[in-house]
Image 1 (spheres, protein in one colour):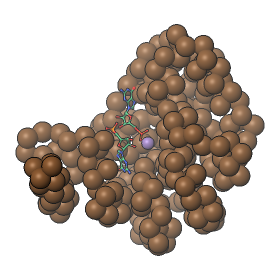
Image 2 (tube, protein in one colour):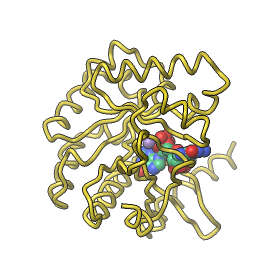
Image 3 (tube, helix red, strand yellow):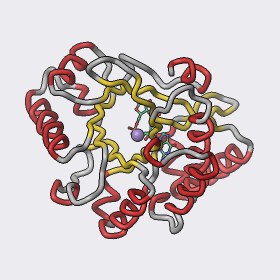
Image 4 (tube, protein in one colour):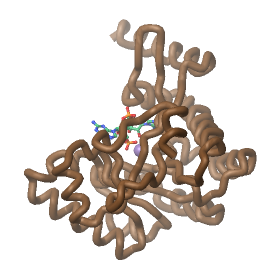
Amino acid sequence: MYREITRHLEFENKLLCAFRQSEFYVVFQPQYYTENKRLAGCEVLMRWKDTEGMISPGKFIPVAEEIGLIVQMGEWVLREACRVKKKLPVDLMMSVNVSSVQLMTPGFTKMVEKILKEYNVKGEEVELEITESVLISSFETVLDILKELKRMNVRVAIDDFGTGFSSLSYLWKLPIDTLKIDKSFIDDIHTNSNKRRLVDTIISMSHDFSMRVVAEGVENIVQLNYMKESKCDIIQGFLWGRPVEENEYIKLC
Ligand code: G
Ligand code: G
Ligand code: MN
């Protein structure tokens, strides 16, 4: 146990130093309109390259949340997104992940407003991705935050939709622009008819509520064709585009 705690503390320390020493960078995963493969925008994703290699966000983000560093990290990611956005030849949406810890930090919306103003980026060109779980745990607070974001025209997406037991009756009460269907639904869509029916229902209900739908993790043609048939608006996945670095993304635009 002692060794376990020491290792954890060492990792926390390494993470803090790495952030101060700018070992982090962001990549951009393109999102395309399903019907014509035109570029719709991208999701901005954090990466950490350490002297020994890549460390996955799945490993460092929970630790960054634990020590509160995620607040500064999230702010930095939004800045990076805006900085690169200004370099693009066309106006395209950028989606940025927001941790529940960051969302619930007092002053969150003020911070977003300040950064958008600093870079002269319009609210409607930025989408913040939040997870379902934060909606359930603190509905009223989140509702106020989302209303404030709406006032700034900032878009909101629900990430990993379908994994968090969110109650639909809650979901429709919130000002949400986009649902991102979790990759686990897309993975076996061609073999699992229950998931297929679920995905169809999610898409048609979302459209009834004027939300757009993004399918995450589309890796093959069969999945793509299925999402086309189901009228899913946008595709994000390795089939059409892996996350790429800044210069490569600029070339795609
Ligand atoms: O990019 P990758 O598939 O390795 O990402 C794994 C997880 O890390 C995803 O759930 C993704 O949402 C999360 N993630 C990636 N970048 C960021 C970020 O900038 N902020 C937050 N909060 N999560 C991120
Ligand atoms: O949880 P979130 O939606 O933020 O996670 C996005 C992550 O999913 C990205 O880090 C990206 O690397 C990963 N991803 C995107 N498309 C695919 C895909 O087609 N296959 C796999 N395995 N991962 C993907
Ligand atoms: Mn995401």
